[in-house]
Amino acid sequence: MDKTIGVIGLGYVGLPLALTAVESGWNVIGYDKNPDLIRGLLSGNSHIDDVSNERLMTGISGGEFFLVDSPNSLSKVDICIICVPTPTTIDHHPDLTYVKSAANLISKILNPNCVIVNESTSYPGTLEM
Image: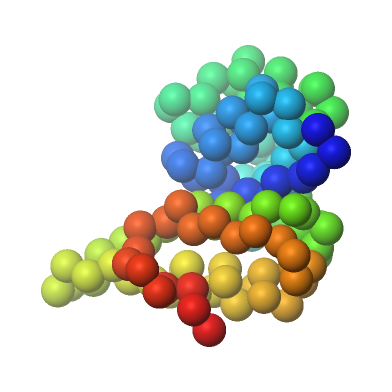
């Protein structure tokens, strides 16, 4: 496909989602702010039980899956999917710190026609700014 998906957060939601998109023929840029995590993934070590090292390496070796720790690499994606953690607060509400941080980050770099999808747990209106 000639479109590119950006996935922000390569944890237990983002990494399988990114690989499924690659396996479906999409170009994918997987971003995580943790450079150690990116280095580990690039060397073929999955930190997610549901993603085998073999599946990870197949996804990377195909040339459609790019793993980055620089948000500027997302500037040309057509679809951006936020997959960051939303831990709960002491009063059992979602802590939206990571979601808001991701939204703030991409608001500065994405093209205006990019479709943004929030896969992180939150309530309607979270990303309205």
